[in-house]
Length: 215
Image (cartoon, rainbow, N blue to C red; front, top):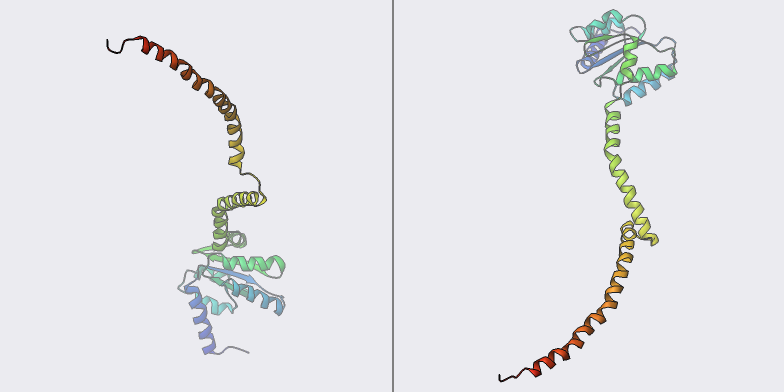
């Protein structure tokens, strides 16, 4: 069913609004892809925040006029599906991932940050980790020391629960054993040291008695 003027204006306005907030647009031919496969592609795009739509090229060119995506006009040829995303890599990722499983989807061009991309450029853009992936990697790096500490503490807790001695006690034990002989020697020597003053006392007293107190 052909579109009337009002329908065309509505489509141009809708696509223009999407382009106004977008960073990337990717074009791909979809000739011969079953409808159910396109439905899956649309669902995947929606989950990733990608605006995906089959458009008449004339309407797409009109919507792109006056935007950073106007240079794509020369690439808007053939039956195309348009992937538009505010995320710089989302549209490239979605279409490239689908193209790996469906060879009838052929990426033809793209534009990111005001620069035209060929097929290789779109594929390269699709390999860049997303923001969520980068945050996940960063979180993993940050949590690595915490995980190691948790494993150590868990091992110590397990030893205590099993009644195993703590590592510090094991290290201190030899020092206690080494100190024991010295303590025994000191205890053995103590009576002899105490006996010597007792034996010397009478001698001191005798000398005192021989000295006249009055004189």
